[in-house]
Image 1 (cartoon, one colour):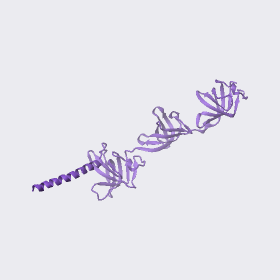
Image 2 (cartoon, rainbow, N blue to C red):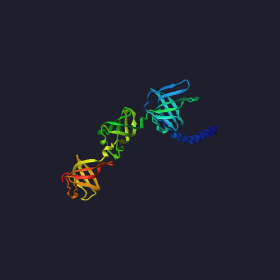
Image 3 (cartoon, rainbow, N blue to C red):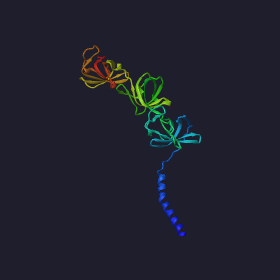
Length: 304
């Protein structure tokens, strides 16, 4: 009798020794369920055909194409299994498309779809999942600049739909005016924004811009007269580069071999007679790639 009891004890210990490590492995590999701290009150409605609408479901676990969520009312809650298939429409709060993996633990969802029949728990095959936590959208706008605030790295555009959008720029934002890259400080009231694209936040009407394209009138590139003070000249024979100060801004004028060099009376003149400080008048057109560079055909010294 004693041997029988001893045999049973030994068998139990042997089984325990085998199963206990397996139990530890199972515990280590079991998914960790995170209970979100933000729990908005939920709303649920179900039609007589079993079509459900669930508002403010809180995701507490994600597994492939299944989301496990809870709907809360105070401390009380109901668990949901939300099934996703190829026909499920997955969208952000304001309608942008998302992928299954974009929804994370703690996200708040609005879900629509039929309840799954024959289950002991609340299962829904989702036709639409709107992730209310994902508010940022990829977007693009165009319009007129109505305010510029370089201090806050922003400007405001009145877009075609009539609303105003704040455009926020950062160190990686690319701003072009025509063919020229410009800093934010060159954007002023009245400028036409052909396009701005980036990440848009609907509640604040703010887009963090990746690219901004500003309209550049072609009139500025038409040939015209320039007048200023000669600061330097590269040579005494053509072709030359002359630096001329106009209204406190230095311009580089490029004159080719066929350019005309004239005096005040419009007669041919020698470049050797041009000196720094002379008043000069030039005729040419600004380069589209640099507003401070001019291809000139004529340079006239008004002091000769």
